[in-house]
Length: 171
Image 1 (cartoon, helix red, strand yellow):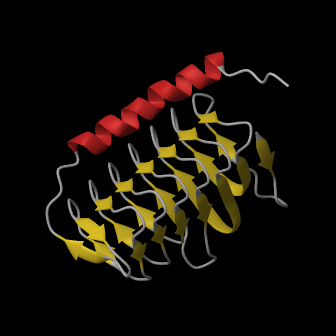
Image 2 (cartoon, rainbow, N blue to C red):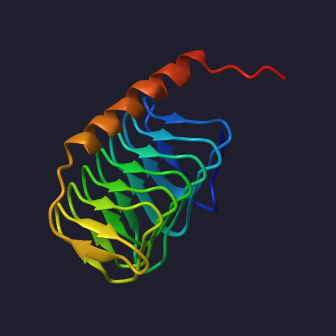
């Protein structure tokens, strides 16, 4: 994995987390226990901090950035889908951010909420706990059963263990 300090900002990665060798982690980034960061994901904590909770999956090609004014915080038991972009936002525990979605500055995605694939959640939007956000720009809709989201997050914990043990490069 490509892990870089930037000046005095040094990533902190829990030893039980799995960060794929082709992921990039830079600067003020904390990755919690049993979390996974998959190929081509970039977590760049250069202007502020990024905190990834426990058992959270950051999927392939995702970009997580931050701003000096707004840290990026992703809670426990979250899944951030492939090719998503999160910047200066808060994603509470048990939320799912769909593939290809964009979550911008000062957004708060509530506990157990779902951001649909391809959605753009514009700056300052509040997605209440247990809600859904769909579309461009995202519109918030009440009601979401997050049971499947927590199961998805636990799948990636198991998959991270498998990769830590069994992944081997062949070239």
